[in-house]
Image (cartoon, rainbow, N blue to C red; front, side, top):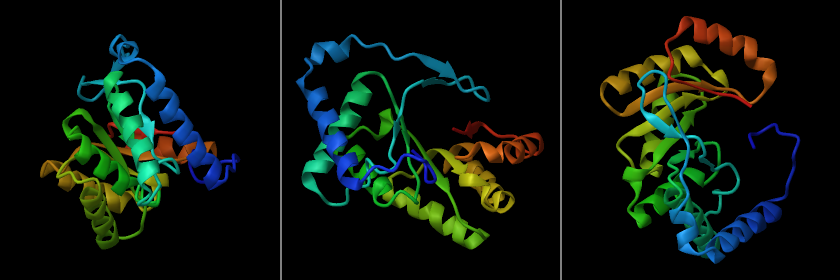
Length: 202
């Protein structure tokens, strides 16, 4: 769920669900996961196949330093990879989610299996660049697979920086997002002006 969603679960409810999901997953025999074949679709701009199912990190990965909750998150990532998935979507606005995802990928030694997507959500070139550098540090990666302008905040400025960083191979793909259907007309306008790889919408 993105900010602004009508669903309003408490932090306790979200964490309980994360633990319950990881526990239930752990009860399944490993052979059950080894037979799963994740469907893929090609990224239109490159043809690279991308698994259709990924993991969002809003709230569920915002677990701070809690060892039990980090263990649950790690189990979720392990099952994702075992099933052939790779996409991990995060944002610097999701509390500790980027740092937790980066730590767990490092502990699992599976950065090469992950397709990391995150976002920039601030005004100004300097603040945007600083936020994107911070995301790379938190995610423990010199390259982000997909960087997106979140909710179109100062999109012209941020896309200019993002294109330069893609030329330096810091980013592989670029995109835009918005969490409300009311912004669809604005998204279409940007898509008609700019060459983008990804669009993330409700």
